[in-house]
Length: 131
Image 1: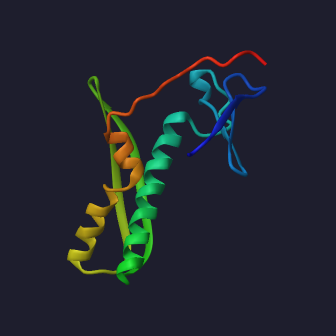
Image 2: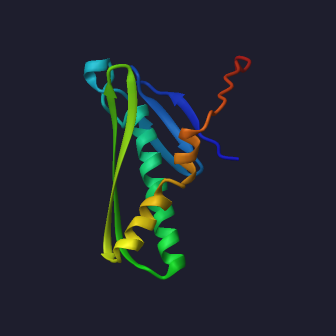
Image 3: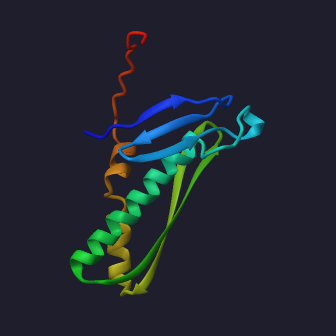
């Protein structure tokens, strides 16, 4: 099971995030009332998606013995009218054929976070007793 704890901190909208031994901060920019001490929640979602795509592509290329030297993934959340779309641009650096590049593009869309975001995921929020 994956577990992350989020706890409000002393800044107005800032949040402390703990995952295993890692400590991160989330916040909102000043124009939304925050202090800009960390990425926004949407930026964390995009970071999770992009890093998952990059890891999945690197693992696949390594398993195939393909020369993939570096992966860049640029993720953007684009709002048009009432619809939201995540655009992920994949850049592959290495000695790869056109067919290998196309296969890695297909593999990028099979990463677990991509699948999670595309699925109908249930979110259950429950209230814990006060401490």
